[in-house]
Length: 250
Image 1 (cartoon, rainbow, N blue to C red):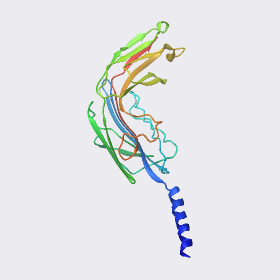
Image 2 (cartoon, rainbow, N blue to C red):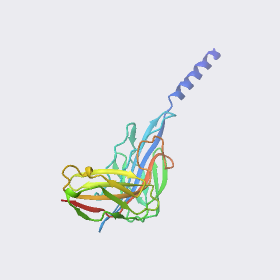
Image 3 (cartoon, helix red, strand yellow):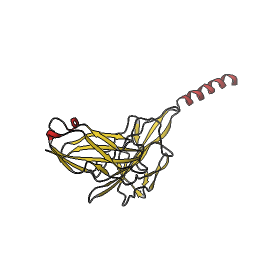
Image 4 (spheres, rainbow, N blue to C red):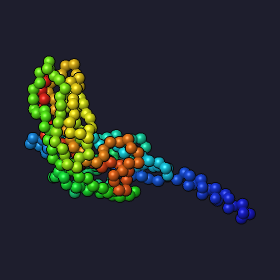
C-alpha cells in the first residue's frame, strides 16, 4: 500500500512545480528638468507594476517619454499587457516622496535638480524593494538655428546643431507646431540632425518650437527582461531640456 502512494505524491509535486508562478516588479522611472527662459520645471515620475510570470517569463516595462518643454507634466504611459498596477508603494526619488496618483503612477516635483548630480530612487512595495540611481545630464545648448523667421518659399533643410551634454547617452529632438502638436521626434546619439522641409507640410506657415533633450539611461520599451534597477525589471532615466528655439515660417 505504501509503495503505491509514493509515485502519486511525486506526480503531484512535479505538476505543482510546472504551474508555479511568481510576482515580478516592473518599474519605469524618470527625472526631468526643463530650463526655459524664466521657468524651470522639475518632474519625477515612476510607474510601478507587477507581473505574474512562469519561471522562464520576462516582462516589458512601459516607456516614459520626456515631457515636451511647454508641458508641466508627463503623458502617463500605458501599461503593457500582463502588468497590474502596484498602489500604496512608498516611492522616494531625488529626495522627494512621490504622490500616489493612482493606477500604479507616482509623481512629484523636486525643488532643485542640478546637472551632473547623481540621484537615487527607492521603492518599498508589498512584494519587494527596488533601488537605483541616475545622473542628470550636463548643461548644453542649441547652437543653430537661433530664433528666426523663414519665408515659406525659401524653406530648405534645417540643420539643428547643439553642444555635447556630459553623461548623456542620447538626445531627443522634437519639432512642435504651436497649436498643432508634435510634428517630428527622433532620438539620436550625435549632436546634429537635419530636418527635411517636408516635415513642415504643404502649408508650412506658422510658429514652431525646436527642442533638444539630453537623456541619461534607458527609457524605451521593447526589451523584455531589461533592467538598470535593483529588485525589478525596467527602465530608469534622467532628462535635461534647455531653452527651446522659436521658428516662424511666413
